[in-house]
Image (cartoon, rainbow, N blue to C red):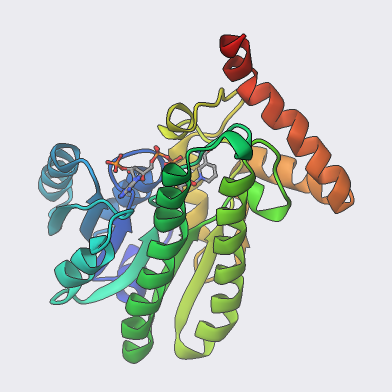
Length: 270
Ligand SMILES: NC(=O)c1ccc[n+]([C@@H]2O[C@H](COP(=O)([O-])OP(=O)(O)OC[C@H]3O[C@@H](n4cnc5c(N)ncnc54)[C@H](OP(=O)(O)O)[C@@H]3O)[C@@H](O)[C@H]2O)c1
Protein backbone atom coordinates (compact mmCIF):
# COMPACT_ATOMS: atom_id res chain seq x y z
CA UNK A 1 0.00 0.00 0.00
CA UNK A 2 1.51 3.34 -0.97
CA UNK A 3 1.01 7.03 -0.34
CA UNK A 4 -0.90 8.50 2.55
CA UNK A 5 -1.54 5.81 5.08
CA UNK A 6 -3.40 8.27 7.27
CA UNK A 7 -5.87 9.01 4.44
CA UNK A 8 -6.32 5.28 4.05
CA UNK A 9 -6.93 4.85 7.79
CA UNK A 10 -9.39 7.74 7.66
CA UNK A 11 -11.36 6.13 4.84
CA UNK A 12 -11.21 2.44 5.86
CA UNK A 13 -10.35 2.51 9.56
CA UNK A 14 -10.16 2.39 12.44
CA UNK A 15 -11.13 -1.32 12.48
CA UNK A 16 -10.99 -3.92 9.70
CA UNK A 17 -12.52 -7.39 9.82
CA UNK A 18 -10.41 -9.93 7.92
CA UNK A 19 -11.80 -13.44 7.52
CA UNK A 20 -9.30 -16.09 6.48
CA UNK A 21 -6.61 -14.14 8.34
CA UNK A 22 -4.66 -17.19 9.53
CA UNK A 23 -3.11 -18.08 6.18
CA UNK A 24 -2.40 -17.18 2.56
CA UNK A 25 -3.98 -14.12 0.99
CA UNK A 26 -6.07 -13.09 4.02
CA UNK A 27 -3.04 -13.21 6.27
CA UNK A 28 -1.00 -11.12 3.80
CA UNK A 29 -3.81 -8.56 3.52
CA UNK A 30 -4.11 -8.39 7.32
CA UNK A 31 -0.36 -7.89 7.62
CA UNK A 32 -0.44 -4.97 5.19
CA UNK A 33 -3.46 -3.44 6.92
CA UNK A 34 -1.61 -3.72 10.23
CA UNK A 35 1.36 -1.92 8.70
CA UNK A 36 -1.02 0.83 7.59
CA UNK A 37 -2.18 1.18 11.21
CA UNK A 38 -5.67 -0.34 11.04
CA UNK A 39 -6.96 -2.26 14.05
CA UNK A 40 -7.83 -5.84 13.16
CA UNK A 41 -10.53 -8.35 14.00
CA UNK A 42 -8.91 -11.56 12.74
CA UNK A 43 -11.21 -14.47 11.88
CA UNK A 44 -10.43 -18.09 10.95
CA UNK A 45 -10.73 -21.50 12.63
CA UNK A 46 -7.22 -21.83 14.14
CA UNK A 47 -7.16 -19.92 17.42
CA UNK A 48 -3.46 -20.49 18.18
CA UNK A 49 -2.34 -19.14 14.79
CA UNK A 50 -4.61 -16.11 15.09
CA UNK A 51 -3.42 -15.42 18.65
CA UNK A 52 0.19 -15.47 17.50
CA UNK A 53 -0.47 -13.09 14.60
CA UNK A 54 -2.59 -10.79 16.76
CA UNK A 55 0.17 -10.50 19.37
CA UNK A 56 2.89 -10.04 16.77
CA UNK A 57 1.08 -7.26 14.87
CA UNK A 58 -0.09 -5.55 18.07
CA UNK A 59 3.50 -5.35 19.33
CA UNK A 60 5.07 -4.49 16.00
CA UNK A 61 2.62 -1.87 14.68
CA UNK A 62 1.00 -0.53 17.88
CA UNK A 63 -2.48 -1.43 16.71
CA UNK A 64 -5.39 -3.11 18.50
CA UNK A 65 -6.17 -6.69 17.54
CA UNK A 66 -8.79 -9.32 18.33
CA UNK A 67 -8.44 -12.98 17.38
CA UNK A 68 -11.68 -14.89 16.88
CA UNK A 69 -11.68 -18.61 16.11
CA UNK A 70 -14.87 -19.37 14.21
CA UNK A 71 -15.89 -22.04 11.72
CA UNK A 72 -17.84 -20.10 9.12
CA UNK A 73 -19.30 -23.29 7.66
CA UNK A 74 -21.24 -23.91 10.87
CA UNK A 75 -24.56 -22.38 11.93
CA UNK A 76 -23.97 -19.36 14.14
CA UNK A 77 -20.44 -18.76 12.82
CA UNK A 78 -21.24 -15.47 11.11
CA UNK A 79 -23.28 -14.33 14.12
CA UNK A 80 -20.20 -14.82 16.32
CA UNK A 81 -18.23 -12.50 14.03
CA UNK A 82 -21.01 -9.91 14.01
CA UNK A 83 -21.29 -10.02 17.76
CA UNK A 84 -17.50 -9.59 18.20
CA UNK A 85 -17.65 -6.63 15.79
CA UNK A 86 -20.66 -5.03 17.46
CA UNK A 87 -18.74 -2.56 19.61
CA UNK A 88 -16.01 -1.84 17.03
CA UNK A 89 -16.01 1.09 14.62
CA UNK A 90 -15.53 -1.06 11.51
CA UNK A 91 -14.53 0.63 8.25
CA UNK A 92 -13.44 -2.34 6.18
CA UNK A 93 -14.56 -5.92 5.58
CA UNK A 94 -12.15 -8.29 3.85
CA UNK A 95 -14.01 -11.55 3.19
CA UNK A 96 -11.13 -13.82 2.34
CA UNK A 97 -11.97 -17.09 4.10
CA UNK A 98 -12.64 -19.76 1.54
CA UNK A 99 -11.55 -23.07 0.14
CA UNK A 100 -11.93 -25.19 -2.97
CA UNK A 101 -12.69 -28.76 -3.85
CA UNK A 102 -11.54 -30.56 -6.99
CA UNK A 103 -12.38 -33.75 -8.83
CA UNK A 104 -15.48 -35.02 -10.56
CA UNK A 105 -18.59 -33.38 -9.18
CA UNK A 106 -20.49 -36.69 -9.27
CA UNK A 107 -17.90 -38.18 -6.88
CA UNK A 108 -17.92 -35.23 -4.48
CA UNK A 109 -18.85 -35.51 -0.81
CA UNK A 110 -22.09 -33.49 -0.48
CA UNK A 111 -21.29 -32.47 3.10
CA UNK A 112 -17.99 -30.99 2.01
CA UNK A 113 -19.65 -29.17 -0.90
CA UNK A 114 -22.27 -27.72 1.45
CA UNK A 115 -19.52 -26.57 3.81
CA UNK A 116 -17.81 -24.85 0.89
CA UNK A 117 -21.07 -23.18 -0.13
CA UNK A 118 -21.52 -21.95 3.44
CA UNK A 119 -18.00 -20.48 3.74
CA UNK A 120 -17.53 -19.19 0.19
CA UNK A 121 -21.06 -17.84 -0.36
CA UNK A 122 -23.41 -17.82 2.64
CA UNK A 123 -20.92 -16.23 5.04
CA UNK A 124 -19.94 -13.70 2.38
CA UNK A 125 -23.59 -12.84 1.77
CA UNK A 126 -24.39 -12.31 5.45
CA UNK A 127 -21.21 -10.42 6.34
CA UNK A 128 -21.45 -8.18 3.26
CA UNK A 129 -25.03 -7.26 4.10
CA UNK A 130 -24.66 -6.80 7.85
CA UNK A 131 -21.35 -4.95 7.75
CA UNK A 132 -22.39 -3.16 4.53
CA UNK A 133 -25.42 -1.69 6.32
CA UNK A 134 -23.15 -0.31 9.04
CA UNK A 135 -20.71 1.14 6.50
CA UNK A 136 -23.54 2.74 4.52
CA UNK A 137 -24.89 4.33 7.70
CA UNK A 138 -21.54 5.97 8.47
CA UNK A 139 -21.13 6.97 4.79
CA UNK A 140 -17.65 5.56 4.23
CA UNK A 141 -15.76 2.32 4.16
CA UNK A 142 -14.86 -0.63 1.97
CA UNK A 143 -15.69 -4.26 1.26
CA UNK A 144 -13.26 -6.64 -0.45
CA UNK A 145 -14.65 -9.96 -1.69
CA UNK A 146 -12.28 -12.70 -2.80
CA UNK A 147 -13.26 -13.96 -6.22
CA UNK A 148 -10.98 -15.89 -8.59
CA UNK A 149 -9.88 -16.51 -12.14
CA UNK A 150 -12.31 -19.44 -12.12
CA UNK A 151 -15.28 -17.09 -11.60
CA UNK A 152 -15.55 -16.15 -15.27
CA UNK A 153 -16.54 -19.50 -16.82
CA UNK A 154 -17.47 -23.04 -15.88
CA UNK A 155 -14.52 -25.11 -14.67
CA UNK A 156 -14.63 -28.90 -15.12
CA UNK A 157 -13.10 -30.76 -12.15
CA UNK A 158 -13.71 -27.72 -9.94
CA UNK A 159 -17.29 -27.12 -11.08
CA UNK A 160 -18.82 -26.25 -7.74
CA UNK A 161 -15.85 -24.22 -6.47
CA UNK A 162 -15.97 -22.14 -9.67
CA UNK A 163 -19.71 -21.67 -9.19
CA UNK A 164 -19.13 -20.31 -5.67
CA UNK A 165 -16.61 -17.82 -7.03
CA UNK A 166 -18.95 -16.76 -9.87
CA UNK A 167 -21.45 -15.98 -7.09
CA UNK A 168 -18.88 -13.84 -5.25
CA UNK A 169 -17.77 -12.04 -8.43
CA UNK A 170 -21.31 -11.15 -9.50
CA UNK A 171 -22.28 -10.11 -5.97
CA UNK A 172 -19.28 -7.78 -5.77
CA UNK A 173 -19.99 -6.23 -9.19
CA UNK A 174 -23.59 -5.46 -8.24
CA UNK A 175 -22.67 -4.15 -4.81
CA UNK A 176 -19.94 -1.94 -6.28
CA UNK A 177 -22.55 0.10 -8.16
CA UNK A 178 -25.13 -0.02 -5.39
CA UNK A 179 -22.77 1.04 -2.61
CA UNK A 180 -20.70 3.70 -4.43
CA UNK A 181 -23.31 6.47 -3.92
CA UNK A 182 -23.39 5.52 -0.22
CA UNK A 183 -19.66 6.15 0.12
CA UNK A 184 -18.69 2.46 0.33
CA UNK A 185 -16.08 1.04 -2.04
CA UNK A 186 -16.66 -2.59 -3.05
CA UNK A 187 -13.99 -4.60 -4.84
CA UNK A 188 -13.77 -8.09 -6.30
CA UNK A 189 -10.23 -9.46 -6.20
CA UNK A 190 -9.82 -12.20 -8.81
CA UNK A 191 -6.41 -13.84 -8.61
CA UNK A 192 -5.12 -16.73 -10.69
CA UNK A 193 -3.10 -19.41 -8.85
CA UNK A 194 -1.53 -18.24 -5.58
CA UNK A 195 0.93 -20.11 -3.34
CA UNK A 196 -0.94 -20.63 -0.06
CA UNK A 197 -2.67 -23.35 1.93
CA UNK A 198 -5.34 -23.49 -0.78
CA UNK A 199 -3.84 -26.14 -3.10
CA UNK A 200 -3.26 -28.70 -0.35
CA UNK A 201 -6.82 -28.40 0.93
CA UNK A 202 -8.22 -28.57 -2.63
CA UNK A 203 -6.00 -31.59 -3.39
CA UNK A 204 -4.59 -29.92 -6.47
CA UNK A 205 -1.06 -29.33 -7.70
CA UNK A 206 -0.06 -25.76 -8.32
CA UNK A 207 2.54 -24.93 -10.97
CA UNK A 208 3.41 -21.29 -11.55
CA UNK A 209 1.67 -19.16 -8.92
CA UNK A 210 1.72 -15.66 -7.41
CA UNK A 211 2.82 -14.82 -3.88
CA UNK A 212 0.09 -13.86 -1.39
CA UNK A 213 1.95 -10.63 -0.49
CA UNK A 214 1.82 -9.44 -4.14
CA UNK A 215 -1.87 -10.33 -4.42
CA UNK A 216 -2.56 -8.46 -1.18
CA UNK A 217 -0.65 -5.35 -2.29
CA UNK A 218 -2.43 -5.14 -5.67
CA UNK A 219 -5.81 -5.80 -4.06
CA UNK A 220 -5.47 -3.05 -1.46
CA UNK A 221 -4.15 -0.61 -4.07
CA UNK A 222 -7.23 -1.22 -6.23
CA UNK A 223 -9.80 -0.58 -3.50
CA UNK A 224 -11.70 2.62 -4.32
CA UNK A 225 -10.40 2.63 -7.88
CA UNK A 226 -11.76 -0.48 -9.58
CA UNK A 227 -14.69 -2.89 -9.55
CA UNK A 228 -12.49 -5.93 -10.15
CA UNK A 229 -8.76 -6.34 -9.76
CA UNK A 230 -6.77 -9.13 -11.38
CA UNK A 231 -3.86 -8.95 -8.97
CA UNK A 232 -0.38 -9.69 -10.31
CA UNK A 233 0.95 -10.26 -13.81
CA UNK A 234 0.03 -13.96 -13.77
CA UNK A 235 -3.66 -13.23 -13.06
CA UNK A 236 -3.72 -10.52 -15.72
CA UNK A 237 -1.99 -12.79 -18.24
CA UNK A 238 -4.23 -15.80 -17.58
CA UNK A 239 -7.51 -13.91 -17.38
CA UNK A 240 -6.50 -11.71 -20.36
CA UNK A 241 -5.64 -14.75 -22.51
CA UNK A 242 -8.81 -16.61 -21.52
CA UNK A 243 -10.94 -13.51 -22.15
CA UNK A 244 -9.93 -13.61 -25.84
CA UNK A 245 -11.64 -16.99 -26.22
CA UNK A 246 -15.37 -17.59 -26.60
CA UNK A 247 -16.91 -18.89 -23.36
CA UNK A 248 -17.15 -22.49 -24.64
CA UNK A 249 -13.45 -22.54 -25.53
CA UNK A 250 -12.59 -21.03 -22.15
CA UNK A 251 -14.37 -23.91 -20.42
CA UNK A 252 -12.38 -26.42 -22.47
CA UNK A 253 -9.12 -24.58 -21.70
CA UNK A 254 -9.96 -24.65 -17.98
CA UNK A 255 -10.71 -28.39 -18.29
CA UNK A 256 -7.17 -28.96 -19.56
CA UNK A 257 -5.64 -26.82 -16.81
CA UNK A 258 -7.63 -28.59 -14.09
CA UNK A 259 -6.85 -31.99 -15.56
CA UNK A 260 -3.14 -31.21 -15.19
CA UNK A 261 -3.62 -29.88 -11.67
CA UNK A 262 -5.54 -32.97 -10.51
CA UNK A 263 -4.07 -35.83 -12.58
CA UNK A 264 -2.35 -37.21 -9.43
CA UNK A 265 -5.82 -38.00 -8.01
CA UNK A 266 -6.68 -40.49 -10.77
CA UNK A 267 -3.10 -41.75 -11.01
CA UNK A 268 -3.33 -42.73 -7.31
CA UNK A 269 -6.75 -44.36 -7.77
CA UNK A 270 -5.52 -46.78 -10.51
N1 LIG B 1 -4.75 -19.74 -3.67
C1 LIG B 1 -5.31 -19.55 -4.84
O1 LIG B 1 -4.81 -20.03 -5.87
C2 LIG B 1 -6.55 -18.70 -4.95
C3 LIG B 1 -6.87 -18.18 -6.21
C4 LIG B 1 -8.01 -17.41 -6.34
C5 LIG B 1 -8.82 -17.14 -5.25
N2 LIG B 1 -8.50 -17.67 -4.04
C6 LIG B 1 -9.40 -17.38 -2.92
O2 LIG B 1 -8.68 -16.64 -1.96
C7 LIG B 1 -9.23 -16.86 -0.67
C8 LIG B 1 -8.09 -17.18 0.30
O3 LIG B 1 -7.49 -18.39 -0.10
P1 LIG B 1 -5.95 -18.68 0.14
O4 LIG B 1 -5.34 -18.97 -1.16
O5 LIG B 1 -5.36 -17.64 0.99
O6 LIG B 1 -6.09 -20.08 0.92
P2 LIG B 1 -5.54 -20.52 2.36
O7 LIG B 1 -4.10 -20.21 2.51
O8 LIG B 1 -5.97 -21.96 2.49
O9 LIG B 1 -6.36 -19.62 3.36
C9 LIG B 1 -7.74 -19.82 3.57
C10 LIG B 1 -8.16 -19.07 4.82
O10 LIG B 1 -9.57 -19.29 5.03
C11 LIG B 1 -9.75 -19.78 6.36
N3 LIG B 1 -10.87 -20.71 6.39
C12 LIG B 1 -11.02 -21.83 5.64
N4 LIG B 1 -12.15 -22.47 5.98
C13 LIG B 1 -12.71 -21.75 6.98
C14 LIG B 1 -13.89 -21.90 7.76
N5 LIG B 1 -14.70 -22.96 7.61
N6 LIG B 1 -14.17 -20.97 8.68
C15 LIG B 1 -13.35 -19.91 8.87
N7 LIG B 1 -12.23 -19.71 8.17
C16 LIG B 1 -11.91 -20.63 7.24
C17 LIG B 1 -8.43 -20.49 6.70
O11 LIG B 1 -8.17 -20.50 8.08
P3 LIG B 1 -8.31 -21.79 9.05
O12 LIG B 1 -7.75 -22.97 8.32
O13 LIG B 1 -7.52 -21.37 10.25
O14 LIG B 1 -9.76 -21.87 9.30
C18 LIG B 1 -7.42 -19.54 6.04
O15 LIG B 1 -7.16 -18.46 6.89
C19 LIG B 1 -10.25 -17.99 -0.81
O16 LIG B 1 -11.54 -17.41 -0.84
C20 LIG B 1 -9.91 -18.60 -2.15
O17 LIG B 1 -11.05 -19.15 -2.76
C21 LIG B 1 -7.37 -18.44 -3.86
